[in-house]
Structure formats: C-alpha cells, structure tokens
Amino acid sequence: MNTKEVLYKLRVRNGMSQDALAEKVFVTRQAVSRWENGETIPNTETLKLLSELFDVSINTLLGSPRQLICQCCGMPIEDDSIIGRNQDGTLNEDYCRWCYADGTYTYHDMDDLIDVCVKNMKNETCTERQAREYLQALLPTLDYWKHYDALSDNGQFEAFKKQLIQEINQLHIEGLPTVENLHALVGKQVNLEYLLPNGQSVKFLDDRKTYLGNQLPCEFGGERCFGVIASLDFLLVCTYEKDGGNPELVLYKKR
Image 1 (cartoon, rainbow, N blue to C red):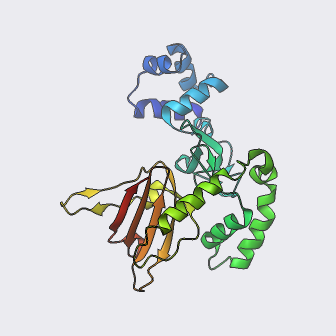
Image 2 (image 1 turned 120 degrees about the vertical axis):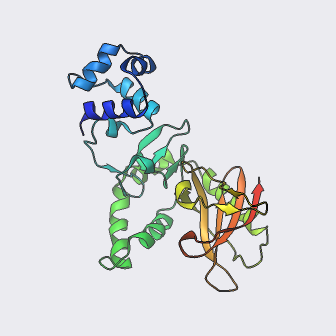
C-alpha cells in the first residue's frame, strides 16, 4: 500500500472522520483529504504525530519504502509489533524490541548477543559455526556497536540485571537451577495464562512490554522446565511443558 491507502485504512479502522483526524494532528480537514487523495503527504512533524496516534512506524505510514534492520542484532524488522520503544512509548525504528526496550539498550556484550542469536539462527541450512561467523562479521558494522561508547550507559543496565539475578537466586526455589543470565523477552511471547486456586485465570504481563527472563531445565529432570521473568516491579517464576503448555505459577513477587 502507498501512503494515501495506509492513512485511509488507519483512519477508518479507528472510527475517525477526516475532521476528527485533522483535529488530532493539528491540520485542516482539507489537508487530510489531500493525503487520502494522494495529492500530498504529511510533513515530518505530522508523521511523528500520526505514528504516535495510530501506534505504527513512520515507515509503515509511508508505505514501507525501507527494509528496517535492527542496528544492534541485525534482524530484519518486518512488523511494527517488534520495533523497540523509547521511554515515552514511541516507536524507535532503529531497533527491535529485544535489543531496545523502553529507552534502554538490553545488550552490552557482543559475544552474549551472538550466543543468543545463534540459537535462533541455526537450522538445517545454517550451522552454528556459519551463524556465528556471519554475526561476528555483521554486528561490528551496525550503528549500535559502531557508536557503543557514546550509547553505553556505563554499566548501569548490566548492574540492574545482576541485581535481578541475585534476587531470583535468593528465592531458593526447589528444583530451579542457579540463574546465571537474563535475556530480553517480549511480553506477548511469554505472557502465559495461569489458573489460580480460586478458579480464575490470570495473565501478569503486558504483551507490548519487554521483560528480562530465561528458561531453565528442572534439576529433578522430567519434561517441565522453569521460566523466570523479571522487571523493575516484580519477579515471576513458573513451570510449563513444551511450548508453554500447562503453565503453573510458582511465585509472583513485587520488588
């Protein structure tokens, strides 16, 4: 789709008239009409307002003329739902949600990032060695690693992760191995539904947020494994079967 089709579709989907949209982004109804007729396109500042209003990237508003690539891990960003977000909630089209969450860069060691990515890349046509060599060549060319000294938080995020790991291990949950690392996890992918003793089902995460977590095997063996999720506000430990089946909440603790 081109810009006029995208804007028309978003306006209609959100049940807005041309007048209502014009008021939201501080233009005239005639300006909106010209956009939807393909006569003009919104200027840069208006595109930013439209991006916030409809929660889509500027790239999407313009008809996706660019192939977005995460400037930290190199992953193609093919869907707005996996774009990272700034602290104010706006989309940051330079990064994916795993590498950049709520204004924070989640990876500060290239080797750690490569280890995580290799697990997801290796398959029948790409060996672990090939994936690792590819990433070792690619990552240094990306903006985040090229400008790491300027973008670094001087170890604050890594210190926060270490604090979370320490708090999780201090819970001394039976069967849970020692947690040694936490990775960025998108809420939508790990937001399991738990059955409470009162018969109600509940989810504790926000699909749109990015958390820190890990999956670990149970020390007692068997098919179930542990999942740990952490944030500024809470610690969550659960167990589940393959692909998140039959989840059981072990602990939910506010920090």
